[in-house]
Length: 495
Image (cartoon, rainbow, N blue to C red; front, side, top):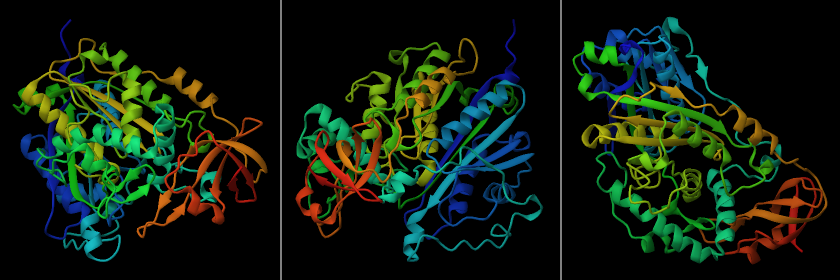
């Protein structure tokens, strides 16, 4: 049977950009990356049916996808923007690939950017965005771009009641569980994390779009100093995603038929498979805060759909906002944290840069570029919120044997959802800490020490340290310790 090339999804072109000097808007960075993408595939503009823009946290027009399409002189049938979530780029590519395979789409331009460096230069979180062509307007006749993706908040009332919102605090809670299982003190665990993350800096040092193209040793990453202060135990700042970057990325998903008609089929990288899943949505309800069954489900479904084992994958980019995200991914994949293939192709969010929800679009673009050069297969994992929303994609330079497949996670998702523990609020009594962190202010003083603890009835509660407890908690991992919880919002004291 002949291959229907109009239903074979490929990534046809990529674009990435970085701005280190001039003040720019996120839309300008998005347009630069998208223009690179289109220049790699001349003549394809008319085949682009959909322009998808990843959620932009910087200043942006009310309808950024429509504004971007106008800038690029595209006339897509649809434009859209996503909800918040670092899973969004891979989810969008999976969805576009599925639409191409179903014969519903010729081409989708997926674009994302952040201009947080420029915003900081202006003393706030919004950089000026003057666009004489009308980009800053309400979207012309298009109205607002439709919003796609899961729009649920990443935390619920239990977390909010104790101020457990900052990603570094929530991810540090996850890290405390991993550290306790390893039998590490905070200092020992930092050293292990330094060894895990140092190879990421080696990759970033060679990437032309990396924000910090600097090689650092594990000791440098783990050593606490004036310019590498503790943010939340056990994380110093060099282990945390760096948000204040000006970066943009774009990928063009089309069919092999479109690529061939454009005369650039030899540059196409095939979309093999993709899958998505979520963990128990709110962190306080998770039965195990040190692992990610959602990511494991997505990895298993994607590799199964591609008829590949993990050993068959030639390159990885594992989401790396904080080290525990990498550790969870390594566990989900069943590989070593020091796998010879490496765990990133960009350098990761602390070193390559963490442009909001867009980072994984850089990962996809880079892995596609790498596969063009070296051949083989590659896997990208992406996550949103607090290791909550997961998307996985597998790519290859040869067409997949069975064609594009989307992995089925329905049964696994039902089991994950059913595992959620009841959440207590305003409870009193003794509880065992299951996850903890100690947040440290810039002056070195302990500013907060939130925990998630399990009560005798099996329910879990988020609690903040009573003010008098803070000073004594510096440098401690409380996992396994007993605390007395009382009040509403809940506060705890060491029992």
